[in-house]
Length: 324
Image (cartoon, rainbow, N blue to C red; front, side, top):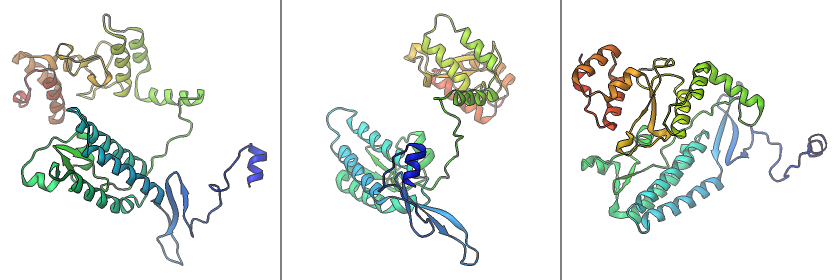
């Protein structure tokens, strides 16, 4: 096999890392995972399914990094934001571990012993600075939890808080089926870029996108006009509030935090909405608010999104008009 790969394909392989394995009898290691075909049926009617674990070396490496990150939280260094930065590094690392290793079917089983060790270390090192989720509920401590943590880990009693900052629990993770991506789709070949454009073309109106490219908003920054096009594509040509398809002349790029309040032309501070929604976001006259609420007929979820944008724009909520 080695001679064939070298002779036919010109490929050098590592004898230590390359071997033929009977997955029904033993594990094969690949990219930090141990993979085996486990029989979940009977001897007469076998049913082999993938069983995958984290490699022991991978778990050891994660444990070493967790020790370092916990040490950084214990001794964050000078500066008011040093502790927050240390917590952010801890969360970013745990989140990346979960995103990579949650393809392993036994990921929760493999990380459980590490979670116990991490909680023990946090308690010993941080002492009174640390609060558990149960303690926070018991003492009615309403710590702010970022949305991405709340969505994925908010129901876990393994959550810990350091001076009000949430720590992502390393042991609160479950297996996720890997999504298959078409190999042809990539940015590095002509065929790959063509496939990307075809996929985009099915969801957005290419003519409108070309119009936006040829007609930038005058007296606006290059970043604003570039992000306007990017958002049109990202939102599939739809209004962020109503979900309606937007046509030329009805595409408004709104600053979430207005520029006079310190907002910028960054992608994250912009959103594409229809003209009516844009007028309603900034409206202060009760008659105009009623007019556009009647015209748009927003449901409760859409109204919440609208009020969030109005709040950022420092405008009074529309909730008192929602019955109209």
